Image (cartoon, rainbow, N blue to C red; front, side, top):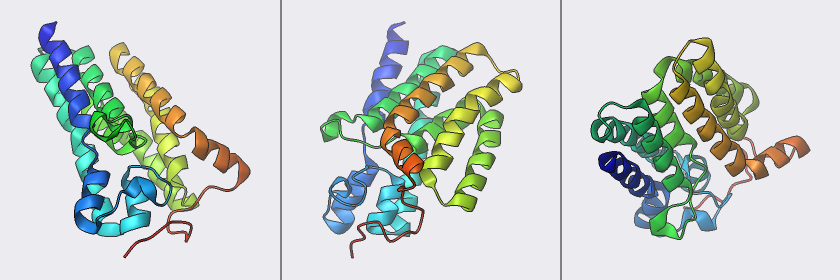
Length: 203
């Protein structure tokens, strides 16, 4: 039990490393949270700093989720719950980072790493549909929501375990809550599309 708690705490601390903030500071001397949408994530990094930094942030945030799940598996003795809770803790760290005054991102890239490691095929199926929605609509927020909402149902359809279902449902709730402003903008037709001029590009 002590090792499982340690895995959750360490995963939260890992998740709290906000790569978008760090890369923005060291590459451009800016805090991405002060520009664009104000979100500390890959999409806002794309708007503010461009493709290269955004790809770096995306990959590093995904890796946080992967590392957290493996940390949970290792310290949790292979327990599904330990791995899942460690993954959830990493997403919580990304959303509410200890090192950055609890002002983080929306956790989708980290959630991709977590869910792909916990349940690859359900996450893949949901991810394909999410990517298609982004290609068609150019709404990243819509694709993100589709991914987290569909994954729990794919877990049920494909017969994965209940711990994975409930964990994915918690991740879904996290994401929907963090996207509540985006949901309102989508309903109002005011959400920025990928590649739109609504960002605050620097440099």
